[in-house]
Image (cartoon, rainbow, N blue to C red; front, side):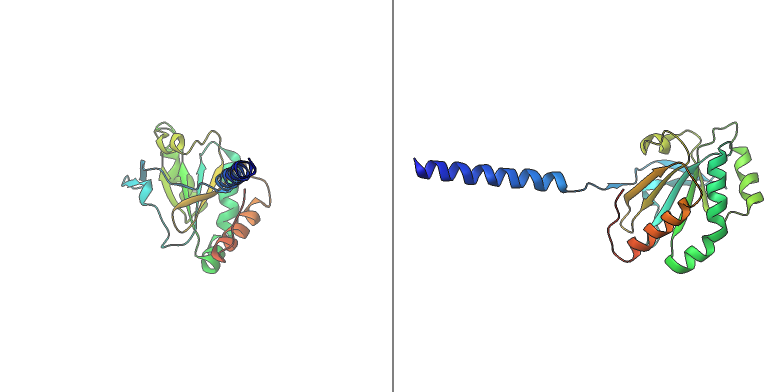
Length: 176
């Protein structure tokens, strides 16, 4: 009877440890495979996006979204410094529909944004990444895995963003 109790106890403890291990594993998602276009109309599959093994930022935005424009303008002011320091790349994905997407190029050129700009006029990427509101920002690690995301923009948010990129470059985990 004692052996049966010990075997049952060992089995139960082993099962509990395995269950806890599964709960603590963090599942990282890759970018979905969706076709979007750049500002020249060239089709790009988002599963092919990358930054030579370095982290990159994907920012969903729209011309009519004032916080989006403010966020990208703020990042634009320090973007060259960020690139020199960390090698990070920002990809700004416009969710403007076909009626307002003609304004994207004018706004981007007027603001002198040097980001890679993609147009998701059909909202396919937006739906695939479960973006419900803009601005919505993702950090993708060098393996193409989404490691962080956040919505909205407030003064100083860009400092948190570059801090997270520095951590990724240093091999430190980031949590959100």
